Amino acid sequence: METEGNNEENFRKLIREAIPEQPSADFTGLVMHQVREEAALQNLLQEHILESPSPAFNQNILAQLQPARPALQYKPVIGRKGWYGIAAMVAAIITACAFVPASGNSPTLATYLNIGLVPGQAFSNQLKSIPQLYPLTVIGLAGLLLIDYFLREKLLALNKPARS
Image 1 (cartoon, rainbow, N blue to C red):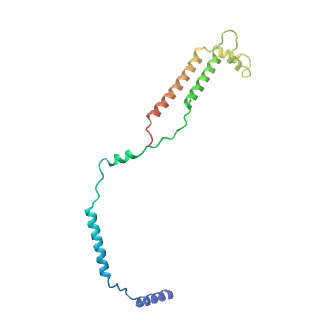
Image 2 (image 1 turned 45 degrees about the vertical axis):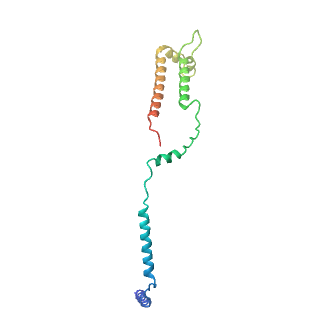
Image 3 (image 1 turned 90 degrees about the horizontal axis):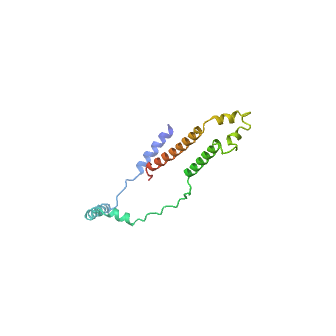
């Protein structure tokens, strides 16, 4: 409380001692000069209003711009899809070779698969009892599914909107 009272007394003392600010003798003249300058600037701006650019302004500017050269991008000779297709074909050929019997008495891959997997001739007898049309049908359907997958992916890539 004592500090508040002390602060108030100090403040009142400062106000009593403060002298009101006296403007200079040419204060009015300076203000009027500034007002005249602003009025003159206003008139000048109104006389010389900026006109809108010509209708071909944008086209002229765009014609002067040089298009940037596109950066060279690495593009492999055989793409990822191509390698997938090659791998699928190799897998299909190997699978077909395993199940298609060779001419003569040479053993098939199915005979070699029997070694160590199932005792006796049970596995090879099971494979021999499957008609040849079934594995070929499975291989053909797998090939058709791969073709369908890649064609759909290509169509989706073509229908994608371009990024800006």
